[in-house]
Image (cartoon, rainbow, N blue to C red; front, side, top):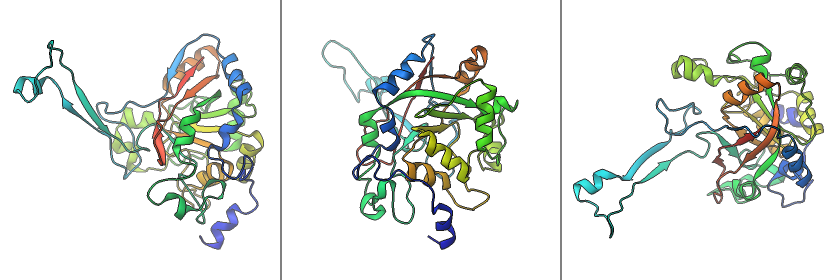
Length: 317
């Protein structure tokens, strides 16, 4: 790491050691029983919204450039019985079976806290070489999956606040944008909240096609800003997510650093990142009734030593 890069992170807050030398879930420690109940108390109508993009759908879905697309195949269906390759068991009941292969970061997913590191140190100071080679030993996705993610969620619909179908590529989201959007929505962001941002950028992919989406690819998002980083720290935000593939603008135009906010927020503060949410139906409902909060429930797959897991979050209003 160059001295110039180190300077950007020097003096910024971190939560290393806050929950002990062996912590693997970071900001999820903020989601105590009382915080979960605060989320439950936010439920008024009982309406539910699932926030995962569909796997193996026609036309596929956005994916980070260079990552393998998901692959689904049938390993047993009616054709196997018709060809005689498989014979039905006693009683004649037949069944289908299938396999799916997916990059752990290849759809809506939750990052492990040791997904990124800087200067050979991941979350809580874990050594990158000892911890990551062959699989993540400390702060993998498994401890997050064992705990589950449940808490009070707020949606900041910045695209709707700015009256655009989506924020254009290269659009920077500032702390002022977060505060102004919350004020516009008459929404109070409180300590320990799960904070989700809607940019609407996936509408570009689905309405105008993948070519338009990837042509000038630099997703709208937050990027390196000391005031914004300190705001996340002081608000003790537990989980951060967006409807983008990277949860931030990559690279940061001011510093040139790739994944700067992964380092500042996830690696340093232990904020759990969930990326590539599908927020359209929930956001439309929020606009109708003016209620931009609720109970958020997400359960990553319990994958040993993994850097992330696909997840289908559910919001209950």
